[in-house]
Length: 114
Length: 110
Image: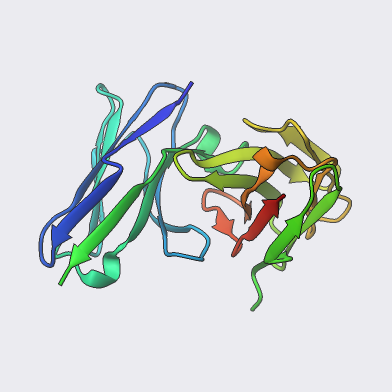
């Protein structure tokens, strides 16, 4: 049973465009929703995270939108650059993320074309 | 500033052999985790640990064993490797919310 569903699997966007990656979760006990960025041959690195008590969070060019009633959240990348080309994973966890691990989506392979 | 390291980075083994993947963190984080990453599955939690001598199963624990005698080390052992355990294995640690991942171990089981 997949508890976090992520779409699309792959995405190609022109430089300067706004790629949007969507995730949906099932477990209402989740209370921490991070996004991780992974470059080839590297481990995932935290990009931005949100808790369900806010509907939006921005950090630089990255924005998370959160819809608690729909159990959905999404990542937007403003003014995308070729250096943003990577695989992006949404995730969710209980108890603030530190205790019993993260449940990941299957990932989105993003390519930003120059 | 080593952070979190994994060894070996690459490993080829044969079915039935025992393999141990090492994970070491220099932050003294309480929590440590093992994930496997497979194409089409994302990352899946194998085992996690809240402190030395405290471990628990994640989503896909079958065929794996962990131990944590010291806070900084969290080895993962495949007792009898199978081809289905060919994967990239990531160790992570955290103190509160953010999990920090190691560089991964790419394991091939022939």
